[in-house]
Amino acid sequence: MCNEKHGFILGASIFLLCCKDYLCSPHCATAWQPWRSAYVLPSRYMRQPPRWGSIANTQARYIATYFPGRITGTPAEMLSADYIRQQFAQMGYQSDIRTFSSRYIYTSKDNRKNWHNITGSTVIAAHEGKSSQQIIVMAHLDTYAPRSDSDVEKNLGGLTLQGIDDNAMGLGVMLELAERFKNIPTEYGIRFIATSGEEEGKLGAENLLKRMSSAEKKIRCWSLTSIIWSWVTKSTLTAA
Image (cartoon, rainbow, N blue to C red; front, side, top):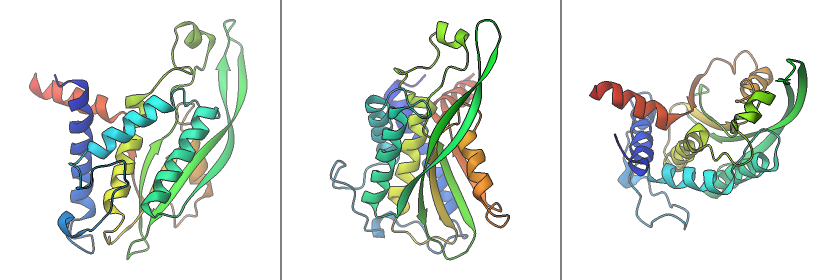
């Protein structure tokens, strides 16, 4: 079994390489030539292009450490959304934050069900392609939200949960993809989307779909969730 650090880097690297192979296949305008991409990383990274997965690893650790308890509608969730927007802006993307209102059912000890209203955040950045077709790379901002008194008693979720796997790592991989592809022409356009409300029932994704036209819904979508767990589980099963 890999250790924590190697799990982060290897899991992210495998996924990133798969993304690279697809986006820079014959579908794309140019072949993958990282030595010619001439991108400039933010100062917090090394001067030389880092190995695949290392940006995702750094970002995931930062998000999990400085924005724990990213429950939809909390200050931590809103601050993490603004951080993601700032990262996109530093890469040169036009990016904005949209808010949405929704609700979910909370179950009390006596089995009463009450609606809880929430306001979530969605961060969007776009990479233009030659074609009008779009690929969406999506990762959710929020950490697990207690949905019952039983969850609270079992200490599930809450304001101290860092959510490294679910889903800081997904956000990290998305940010690394955005960094590495920012100067590379692609056939399809790419929209990088970080949304919340996933733990309450994919509320952010549903709100996004409601805003799309029929034509816009004809897309390919990669949802980045629990990447470390998925990679470790598959590796363990293969080894067995």
